Image (cartoon, rainbow, N blue to C red; front, side):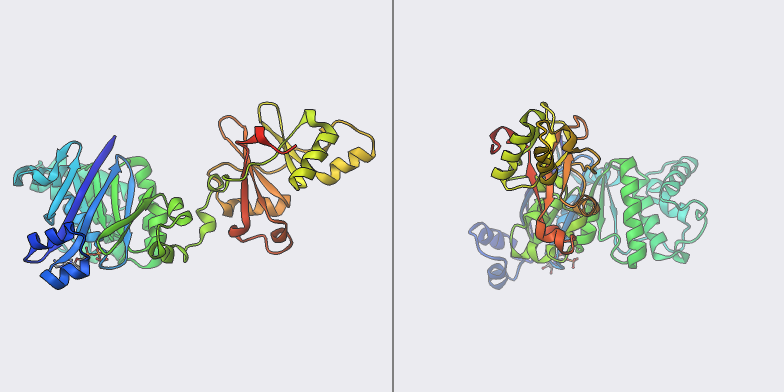
Length: 412
Ligand SMILES: Nc1ncnc2c1ncn2[C@@H]1O[C@H](COP(=O)(O)OP(=O)(O)OP(=O)(O)O)[C@@H](O)[C@H]1O
């Protein structure tokens, strides 16, 4: 079930909003609208869903509209048109009191500049939201302590936040947001002010925390590496428009346009591209025991492949068969291939990344079998071009896969 629905959301800054909106509907560009009305279209017709428990990252260059969009979700900024629907409640049409309740209980925000009360202690800062709700001191302090422990700040409860490092202040910000146990966390460039090492550490901790909490997180960043590390899905914004939404792998393998490509080309893909996305298009050929020496040779000749996977009748992977071994069996007059099946080869799974597979390829020399973890069946093989085996063996671009889906159509 979808948790948060964003429907045709538009945000325009300026005095001539109505006119700007009309021009927008007529298909005029952001630049034309600015020229004619003096209004800035910060978010243009955004429509997408964020699933319950999803880590959703919004990414884009400075000025692309990320913060504006995020602030429309809890109406820190009033959207000009469109709807934000949370669990069937239309946030955009709530009265002040109900909206306050949503902000307190359902959507909490974590800011880049922490937004803490500097002369209050960690405990008081974390409990602050609960204090505003008149929750009795003992109860709010217990709750605050619980989240302080969660974000690894135990022992710092009574320190003033101004005395803490940036990373620790951001933990306080996070703990404060979590104190109300909201369903949704809105995080606006929450780690951007931290130095790189601390930033990576905070990302790791947030990933760990999310595994336990299963919150819906909407996280803004202008850093694609951060988006990829954190996001289940990433929305990419440009000039107020959401131009692509997808998993990190979708975005890297199929960038929607040159703008997305320009982000993507700087990313190290080896650690993101998985076997699953390599297993498409070309079907592989596999050998069954019943093919025997002659049948195997025929399959190798007609497919042009000198290494083929051997599978059982129900497609369980048995091992690899190499041309040289089959030829040896033929010379010796054998008809069965049993002896030529090399069983001890490293296998990978659909979620195994290219980076993780490269040592297998180096070790095995030719290909990596991709196996379904549950059924143990062979899904396909990821092979390296012979050229690459000769050279470095480390470039993902030259790694390709063959799916076993079309096994019935194999070349014989
Ligand atoms: N209060 C405002 N008044 C007028 N225009 C604004 C206001 N806030 C933002 N804008 C404009 O709206 C557009 C989107 O800005 P926004 O801050 O949402 O982008 P962003 O992607 O979050 O950028 P950054 O990463 O720099 O925060 C920009 O053109 C910006 O200049």
